[in-house]
Length: 188
Image (cartoon, rainbow, N blue to C red; front, side, top):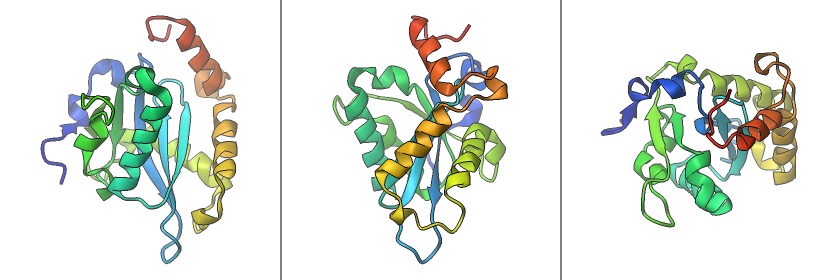
């Protein structure tokens, strides 16, 4: 499906081993069939487990590109440092990977996209685990169109302030701050 795209097999070891900040896994959380098409585009940073959740009108290529464009507008020149790479599944909403990679502002590459193997959700385990946490607040079958942006923001804040054993009982926000204070962007 994703002709010419990069396989997860091409992903460098510093990404695989979570040695550098700025490498994300992306996915969509959708509501029940038959409901409005609203969904959530989730981005999970591999090293710190930082979570970004964006409410989208539908799980389509256009909605995903619009969400990434909004992030680029928000982060400006630091977008390329914050989002060095994004690993995605093979869902139809991610097929236009070239538009995801290409900056709307400068027409240059803004990030690098990798694709996991089909039916291999464990290759994006961070994203899958984060989505399970989201489902604590939004159980399967919940009509996402009924959630406000404030509701989504509350979930994101809770996740980023939740201490985790895997992070030495620190929060994602604490680790992101540590990375920001370390000018190399490499976690020590």
